[in-house]
Amino acid sequence: MRVVICGAGQVGFGIAERLSSEGHDVSVIDVSPALIANVRDQLDVRGVVGHGSHPDVLGAAGAEDADLLIAVTQADEVNMVASQVAHTIFQVPTKIARVRAQSYLAPVYQSLFAREQMPIDVVISPEIEVGEMVMRRLALPGAVETVRFADDAIVVVGIMCREDCPVVDTPLRQLTELFPNLGAVVVGVFRHGNLIVPRSEDVLRVGDLVYVVAPREQVRRTLVIFGHEEPQASRVVIAGGGNIGFYVAQQLEKREPQTKVKIVEASRPRALQIADQLHRAVILNGSALDQNILREADVEDADTMVALTNDDQANIIACVMAKTLGCVRNLSLINNVSYPALANALGIDAYVNPRAVTISRVLRHVRRGRIESVHSLQNGSAEVIEAEALETSLLVGRPLRDLELPEGVRVGAIYRRGKAVEINGDTQIAARDRVIMFALASKVHQVEQMFRVSLEFF
Image (tube, rainbow, N blue to C red; front, side, top):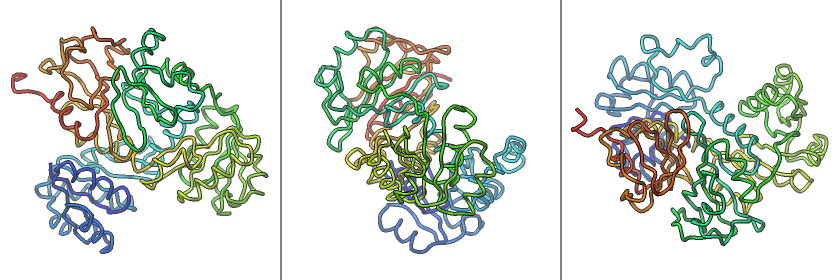
């Protein structure tokens, strides 16, 4: 696939790194010569210095032959115009654009991005995507990561195995025997910096980050089985009143009116602005790294500190300080790709990586076959893929125990006619089932092939 990426920042670089490593023909455009030099030095991609919305620059990047345009510059308007130019002049089939300003995304203006208006096939709003991810973490406080699939009926949760985890040192095959109606499947284990797909005889160890696929109604029970019985937050302190922090506070007021929310915002004008728009949240103007401000926010009585500033280090320090002062748990926004692997050691209970969220949305439209959804884990070490099984797929009509799946691939769940199917060795995948699979990065291409339409289908 030939891909043109507008924007060489953290997200653009991350997408380029991922796609080029998979053998795609990638060109990256940015106005910064330094960023383009960095891309050329570190990745096997073509770099073009210039404005991503200019026709001549897009032409130089190979837009004429491109299958996909991904516009993720810092400016919404550049991303939107780049998509329009790519469509009108170069007939690029698929355009993905990042749009941050909520005004563009208001329901009353939903026709703006129609094909006959401003033809953007996929609009990505990081603030909403990340904000929703934070909301899911708050709803399931025992989970390190939470991702939903199959119309929200299937949930993938990352669970840390602590010293008090009841299932440590228990072979995975016994979990099914001990909890026969749970319907949860352990699909991956992150241990000592490596992500593996465990076998039935493997055991979990203290310090493991375990990825479990479960029906939505069984997620809380699954967390309890793994030793996490944390109640849902009722007192939340948010560090950072930017777009994401404001969105989370706004949604908590709407969905969880009983939850008490306090926001610590360093900018006085911004603090005044969000104070006018929120109804019950208390806004404090000051630094989240100031212990006096945190005490003023009653952080010692809070259930959760949610650090959502643009500074990773400030987020981490604010979370650690809050816990030191008595806050029960914390959740941090982390952009740096090196930090998530160290999150637990740094004192972070849960984290959200905006870059990973955006890359996951993009990958769905890069993956071939009947792919419905994709989520990238551990900086691209693995993916959870939701795909529709077709009549011609080799997965259909055979018991799961007889499927010759590649090592590093595991079926986590099957979604059929609106509900999760209980899976065991005798379960068979039927045509039109949506299958949630866990695959190590090196095996993703093989998973794609399992869901491709073969020639016999026609």
